[in-house]
Image (cartoon, rainbow, N blue to C red):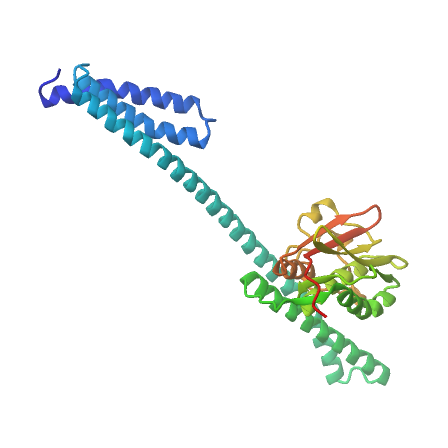
Length: 344
């Protein structure tokens, strides 16, 4: 049994270092160990190394003092191993959560940059047209009454388009900032769909696309905002009309399934490329050329935020929105929780 400080230190090192080395080998070879096993090993290695050092210093004499020390170390291990496992799991979850947050922030920043690029481009085009037509009218380059009327009407159309883009930007900024607050009330989905179909009928006729609705005879009640749901379905129907060639069909249907209400907008258009399906609801994402409609005069149609706004509004309703391809064309589906029928 060692009697001085130097001998005590040497005996302790000789007995504890092999335990630490053995534990390191176990951890190294067991890289695929579960988090629970790894944390338990990390706690047990110093505990067993301490016990080995105490035994070495005691001269391998199992005295009452050594027995008390062993009991203390066993209790410490019983307490610290579960605590270490719990803290390890918490730290692992926190690390994963922080990584996800960083990835979301990077994605949001990328989305903001893309939005600025798209909006800068889309605002510049109609503004240039408005300025050119206004200068032509101011300088009296155009003096024929029919041309003056045509220029004036075009300026009004472009101004309305700019106003719509500004509204989309404002709505998107509220969604991204988490500042969107909706007043939900019990609505009959039939009435919302009827209003959307009536408002979109003229656009469908100009595009030579048949627009029809297919709904069950009974009401479908959901908790929602009439304005917000109307905007969602209008965006989806407008998008479907824009991507459906003349002679095609856009159908909006509704129904219920397993405690949820669903609304589908089907078109007979070009469909959606597989790579676009993953990003179709991102801000300012328009996808491939086949899914990038062009309005009259070669101007890009819409702000590129319609589907992103629809996704944000549906999320605020605690619902889901999805896009998929059919045998001919594409389908957008909105799923909302059913609401209790209002008392009559």
